Image (cartoon, rainbow, N blue to C red; front, side, top):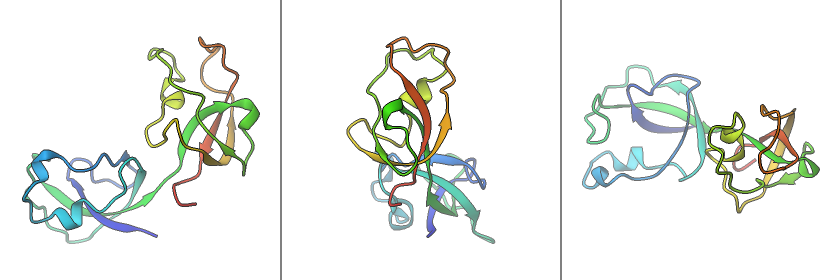
Length: 149
């Protein structure tokens, strides 16, 4: 089910994904707080629609203002230990990785998933993009189901 929220006009395009980080200090006293701060912190969302004829509203955070969009929680691609990588099972991330130059880093430390949580594996995608894990982990690339699924 979609939720209507406000995002910066430069970010407002269908298909764009983002992780909601919560309230900024600049939000204090804003009259649009109810429409803007209505998502779950740490959840990955996809913009599924732009509200037609929506006006651009002034915003202390976004220099070009904000506009109304429809969003839905979306899946998170992630590397998990191979022994946990089965569609329909619960899996968790292997743990932090300091190797930011690795092509798999964005999947080992993905936006929208935490190390201390188990998530449902929606789909097994296959081998991770790296040739060799520098931490000697046996990993498989999966898609975690959207939160709430």
